[in-house]
Length: 95
Image (cartoon, rainbow, N blue to C red; front, top):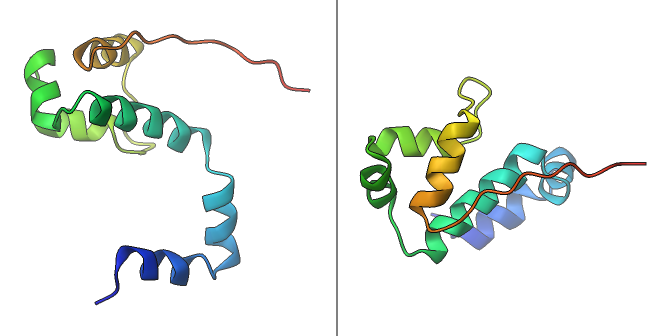
């Protein structure tokens, strides 16, 4: 069985995988922010679910990148509050 690092090294040999790894889709960047906030708060998905009065699978869906499930802004604000954060949205002009 491969370790995480061995698997990562093997997968990054594929040029398409490497491209996605080095330049992730915006959804992955957002996902990383939410996961980091939960981990920094030392909370499990179950902990967040309890604070949001929802289920753990609902939190898993929020934390997954899926074109099938797109949480509402209201849900994202609630998630942020549950992990002790404030959600701030800004637009950044691109050239």
